[in-house]
Length: 288
Image (cartoon, rainbow, N blue to C red; front, side, top):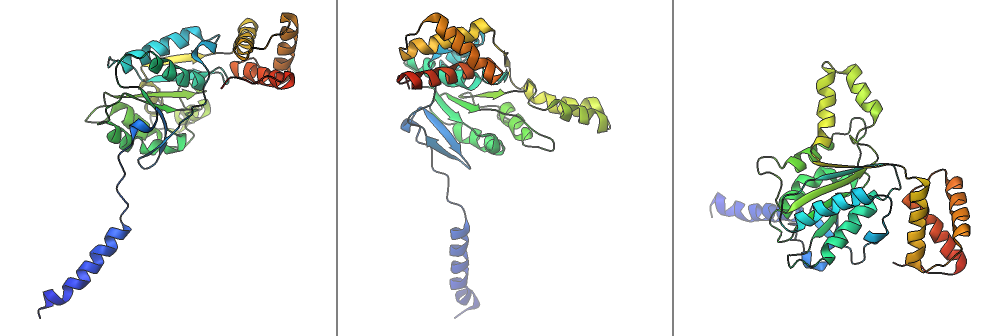
């Protein structure tokens, strides 16, 4: 018996132990399971059978941004060129609701092409985006990646992964993947962070440019601003009509304005919260 023969069982046991320690290969996503998914790193996609969204027609006061994003998404779903989009601005004005509503609206058109898939990526999973892009490159569907409430704080370097994913590196961004993000910040970074970079860097302008260049990767910027009183009341009326709630206009106006005053703001979210409260008091069910 040779030394090689004596060592063979040991080598086999070591190889088997290493195989058990190695992570299991990421299974291929089942895109037929749903039209909407939540990304589960490192490469999993959890289907969402019932998406929490507002009907496209109920989004009032943001008509211009709504139409622009819809047209951009429709072109992408038809295989035409389209831009990554950053929806930024006032809270509660329907940024994330618009993305989900546009996705449903585009799929409802029935163009005869494969349906548009929506994948939500949580902010803390941004580091995994380049790998996800690689996984999605061969998918037979147009895919819309969506990150809600995206922003970066001081010493947070995960924005570099997002820049790499949006640019696509040497291979380029997959033709079948588009990225939409919502944020309260136009440049995704707090103002004091940019000012700190200017005051501490050896070359302040280069330090700030390196950070701000992230938002430049989005070809489409859509700003959402605080709504007027008339827009707020129009939102309330739209939600009331959808729920089938009939009430004297003067009473609706008075109660809706009082509700917004106690909340200290007017927005689509505040309008929906008012109608939710009113529907509960009157015994109505809201459409889902």
